[in-house]
Length: 349
Ligand code: PHE
Image (tube, rainbow, N blue to C red; front, side, top):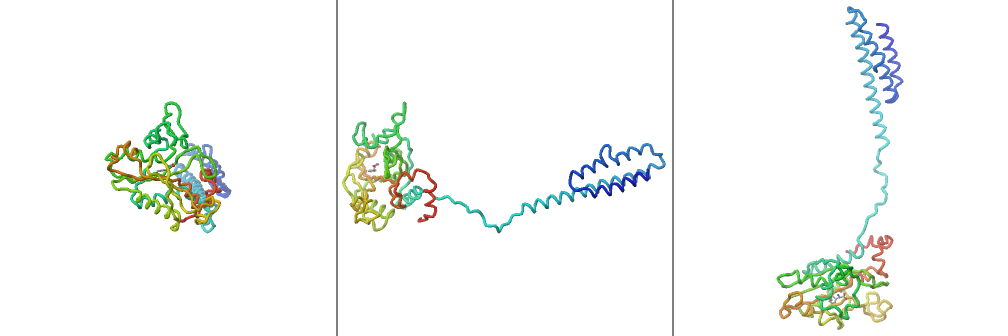
């Protein structure tokens, strides 16, 4: 028995040197400690040993079992540590390697121009009013003094909904905000709002799109005159375009304002001398405006003998086109990344 123990011990000392990975380690563990392992067999043999030798041999068997168990455990730790070190080495991050170019997004030209408009009007004490894009015929036309069958509807009679919603359409002008703001203002007192947003008409060419962005302004108070309108729009044009921009008011017609005007600015390309862009006139039309028609005030619950107001509306796309040199309005809505990335570095704000 003594002899046997020594043979096993020597064999194990040789075997342990052959361990190179977890598989060989497990094989050797089974060879010695498994069900039919050499050490397990030694333990089984103990029952046939005479009693007086049991104690001494028992100690020896136990020693060799501990030797095998501890050596294998130690080997296992070595292997695990080695594996971890290899993993760490292979995953090493070199922080000095130059990074891939990070692509940063940028603001859409329409967002830029909208923020400019909003900043300006907020600084003059206006609030931003947000109206829905699907509007009733009533708010889009009737309450703006355009009853059914009115000739001036023609240019804007466009995208209606179907069936039970046939009295609703995609708003064709942000002037609908005038109606909404006046009706929501239950104390029927002074108002000062701008409403920027999308509008829809049936236009489609290089300077007109079926979808575009307008901004509407409305001021109502007890002592508002055409002079206030003029001053506001002059400041507006000079701030958004250039300080040297000249502004011209021409009489015009809108059903919801009386008197009505159209507003031209000196051509930002030729400065007023005349060029193909301004069709040799030196002027470019940018705004519709006027004094709110008493009918419109009354229809939304205002006392037109006490209150007056002025309103104006303009296409924000046109201003974006002037400012950023965009020649085709359709590119604004095409979402072509080649167009949009041109604005990545236009940080003029
Ligand atoms: N809503 C008009 C249009 O779309 C513009 C306008 C607004 C005119 C406010 C007068 C007053 O053409």
